[in-house]
Image (cartoon, rainbow over all chains, first blue to last red; front, side):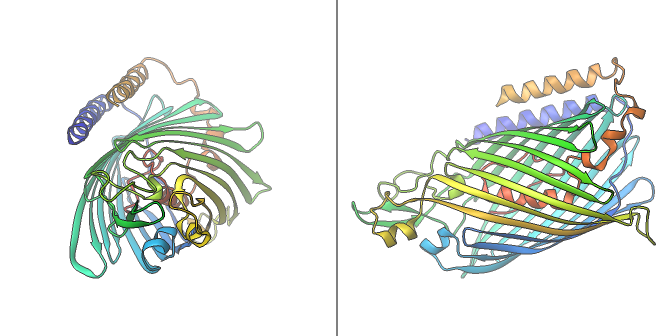
Length: 387
Length: 75
């Protein structure tokens, strides 16, 4: 697996370098991102897990060439998820993320750099992001390249000496294309490589100890993972003022997971100030090679996982949102503003992850418990101003 | 995987190089629909990045979400 990772990384670096050389020959126009501020409250509630908190994003231009952005994001987590209920105690924790970014426009090329810090009481992550994008072909095409590097430190509550590291690298290529005066298309590719401790230190796998009993042991993951994703998006302006969008993404990784998702959505402005959004998203994935809901015996194989995110499952999201725009012709220092509310309901259905608490209560034999599934409610409320 | 990367590279190269010889077929004055905010792939970045974070935390797949990307830093 290490060799496979090295080959992928080397190839991607080589290709990114060549693309940068090609881009440097071409002239184009570009603009800096809009100056705006967003303050959001977000909430996720599903499967015994509640996560909510604020998120603030501010972007300000400095002179004609620079744009600076700052983000503050909090997840306040209360977890009594099915894993936690089966093998540990419910817990509360808080994750705080800070992000600082700078965009620089020079000779019609936008370059961006950002740094992110994420802190939890048992998990810290730092990452830096670099990007370059260029409009070419009279503004019809935008090509973008990106690279990120992340450093995670995984800890364990109750064990101050426990500290494991994981490094992450992302490589991105994006192509956005104007096809007609009503149709936009976007193609994106991203490969991510991880190296280090990739487990969750609390999660456990179960194995049979007899035909009617089972026990748990710590999960063991490989130390490397490389993932590839290709996404295609399109957006179409309808004959009246409204838009349709579609997205298809395919994914695979060196752990044996194959996934795809498909999304369609519709945006409908209403009168002068309202915008309504609707969407449906379908996601499906196969399980990792080393995933099993119930291993036949202890240490059954070198890698062991019973993380439902690595199992075979599908999910279906229905989403709706509404925005009300105010002060559209400006008010004091603001150019315009909007108040936004969105709601997504996600249904998860697992194909090989069983509901142990319900099975145990029913007296089901190990491996004969009902399959697990749950609904999650995702709510966002945010206010945005442009200045 | 390597074939896929090579194919993407070739497509990008061809598009970039042919871009120099073909004239844009949608003129700047014909782009008022495309410039409408409802045609943005992520109209509100704060909302798009939050939803990507939700999906990354609950799904095995990750990457190519559009926008800045960069991962959610969650385990």
